[in-house]
Image (tube, rainbow, N blue to C red; front, side, top):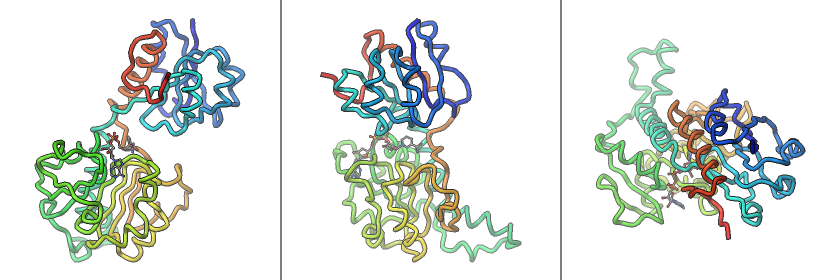
Length: 319
Ligand code: NAD
């Protein structure tokens, strides 16, 4: 049987991929490691490699002469040297579409939680403060709020769709969105107008050189309504030092984050303990269904690639 190595599947807790690989004639072996180079000597005969966050470097690919396909659990491929893979004509395959509903639901959960001030509201009864809405003022009904959506691809658009019945005003900033694609319940604005008018800002653009530190002291200074900020996209889009200052100064009223600049963050990271922040540990993608969808789609795409069949999500250019 031809061999495949699967790295970083320990978070899933079972060997689900084998049920697809073995009948197709592939032996799938699971490994956990910090650096795949430590395993290179055992992987010299693999034809397929699946990774989660492990680094796939030029030097590693030098050690895997029979490799014909690389798969990444998830969307981002910044841990894989795409140029080095392309040079060797090895397709890199991801799964961009496995968790759109889940991430959008996570963002919408954050939107309602920050709008209803649930973190503060749940802390009050614990201190014996029952019925004291003064500590929560002001709260507006969601239909009276303005939501700014930064990035309206698959997930941003799903958030807008999910919010349609609630009637809030929605402002969009996405430099690549064509007006024809504008949802009926949203308006396109410039970035400055979105910053100035939004009560809640939710971030759904990818991490690129343009979006890195897109939210920093300069951006926070242009926010006029002390908005809450939600980030379920990528941590480095927000400068966390500047966010902490903006929270402490009241320029930003609250932050709800699923992603952080460095993951995992230090245990004593000030945002983890901050009274004006809630943080979930990069969990927005997860549901029972999305986890299975991710694993099955990636395994099937790797098999299709190895068998010479067309694959919908190859991220690098193969000449
Ligand atoms: P997508 O590619 O469909 O959409 C991204 C949108 O951002 C596009 O419409 C693009 O035009 C827009 N954009 C690009 N640069 C921009 C800029 N400078 N300003 C504003 N908009 C800009 O991606 P998606 O599937 O909607 O996913 C969005 C992001 O969510 C991903 O890049 C990923 O980082 C993140 N994500 C997080 C999780 C999680 O578990 N937290 C899971 C999946 C995806």
